[in-house]
Image (cartoon, rainbow, N blue to C red; front, top):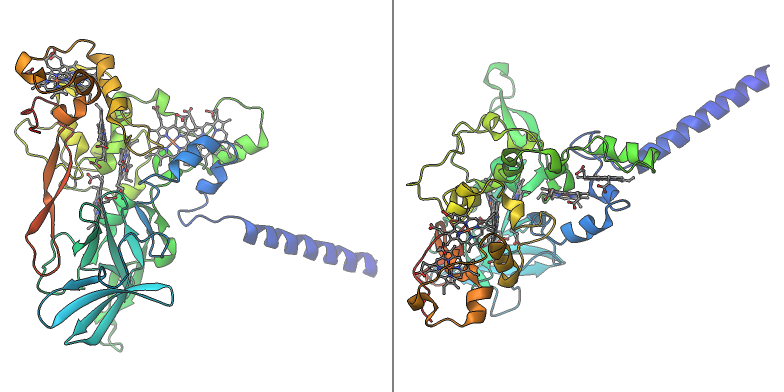
Length: 403
Ligand code: HEC
Ligand code: HEC
Ligand code: HEC
Ligand code: HEC
Ligand code: HEC
Ligand code: HEC
Ligand code: HEC
């Protein structure tokens, strides 16, 4: 009896051990147990996964490694001159990347590139300090293939104290949780203690991943693993069954500007919900509002006749949510033509344009690139301000571009 008991205890212990082991192997998502993580989707959705991991969405934030960084670190291309005696140099030290400040040729301080934002047109960076992230004053811009001031930064004075707060992460990452830390200037006095809202480094989920757009999918994964013959999707929101407004809101969460009054954190949003409970100002937009080309694609699109007069147009009419915007304007022109079989152009409009361009590049004339008023930058040695231009989503009639 005693032996059996020991054996039994042993088995129970072994079971406990293995189950503990299994648990530690299992992926744990910082967002909680409802989330499965993007890796878990590969086995059943390989094509969506193969596409999506290469997108700007997945790289909207990434760790500051040599593989992910875009700017130059070689001599001659890695220096930003602020003044006669102050310069900032991008340096690679033991595989960690830094912005190093030199005063009269002597190193003063060095800040690491820890989190990168963006890949398409520009890349800005942040470093951690006291449970918060701060922006580095110099960013990389593709347009000039070089370093320039981060938006809103001076080209003559250094500043390492501007916070990159949770708002930035709410549009550029899939999660970052708060960490409440009690701080006090006087450790003996309870009454002066304050609770501050910090960021928990370990909860950052880089980039915009599958479940950021599709909502928590752990149950979906478990059900389909258990019943592999099920062809009908279980426990996941189906975009096919959403209304036009719901489909638009899923993108507008991050693509309708940032000037609304916030009622809830963007991180809480799940597909199918209405943005009305997240922002105070409704998305009914006034014709006379001048939206910036940066960050407000929906605001601009909503001012186009195409959008107002058609019943179905949403972002997916022209974009595959698992891919970046197409490089080729021919693809978009085909989409335009699917609604505009015959567009009437005046002789003077077609005069200087070949038939092929007329047919293949509707976008160049009807969605021209425009300068952002929100984002500008300067190059080293207080060079003139350079504009940052993006395509407008206000589809309309503009002066024909001169050649
Ligand atoms: C074990 C297999 C399996 C795994 C793992 C899995 N899915 Fe699915 N999923 C399915 C099946 C089956 C369907 C239904 C057929 C289809 O649409 O491909 C589906 C459909 C979907 C749909 C479309 C729903 C609709 O009705 O429009 C989405 C979105 C989706 N899955 C997201 C995910 C995400 C995100 C993950 C990873 C977190 C994931 N799936 C992991 C099996 C799986
Ligand atoms: C959580 C916020 C968020 C959501 C939700 C979101 N986006 Fe984005 N999107 C971004 C950010 C941030 C970028 C810029 C990423 C970068 O370049 O760093 C971006 C970039 C893009 C781009 C440009 C990609 C390129 O490289 O050409 C397109 C197109 C786009 N989004 C469409 C969509 C559509 C369509 C939806 C809805 C299905 C959507 N987005 C939902 C935040 C979001
Ligand atoms: C930027 C938001 C976004 C991201 C990120 C995203 N999806 Fe989707 N996904 C959508 C939207 C929107 C649809 C619906 C497309 C439609 O109806 O036109 C969709 C549709 C799907 C479908 C249905 C079949 C199809 O291709 O239309 C599957 C399956 C799916 N997504 C899986 C995934 C997986 C797996 C990932 C991560 C590897 C992922 N999605 C990442 C927005 C996103
Ligand atoms: C309301 C959502 C939103 C917020 C908040 C936001 N961004 Fe963005 N950001 C976007 C979108 C969408 C894009 C890409 C399209 C565009 O420029 O319109 C973008 C583009 C960028 C780019 C260029 C990316 C590229 O690949 O070219 C950088 C860098 C960037 N954001 C950094 C930041 C930082 C830093 C903050 C906080 C100070 C921030 N963003 C706040 C939505 C947002
Ligand atoms: C889903 C259908 C649809 C798509 C796709 C579409 N449009 Fe339209 N577009 C419309 C409708 C409807 C109108 C309004 C026509 C009217 O007023 O009679 C319109 C109006 C226009 C106008 C006249 C604008 C004005 O202010 O007078 C232009 C120019 C135009 N579209 C160009 C384009 C281009 C370029 C594309 C592709 C990038 C495109 N459209 C894609 C449906 C569409
Ligand atoms: C009628 C077609 C059409 C619709 C609808 C549309 N887009 Fe676009 N979008 C484009 C074109 C064309 C480009 C430019 C691609 C390029 O220049 O490489 C673009 C580019 C973008 C970019 C990248 C901007 C840049 O300059 O890098 C983002 C972000 C974007 N779209 C988001 C959206 C969102 C969000 C919606 C829905 C609110 C949407 N788009 C609806 C046609 C469309
Ligand atoms: C060289 C510039 C240019 C190109 C390329 C171009 N358009 Fe236009 N489009 C214009 C101008 C300018 C107008 C205003 C009428 C005019 O002066 O011809 C116009 C007018 C329109 C209109 C409103 C008039 C109408 O027919 O209802 C539509 C729709 C339109 N274009 C669609 C397209 C589509 C679709 C394409 C691509 C297949 C395209 N355009 C290519 C410059 C251009």
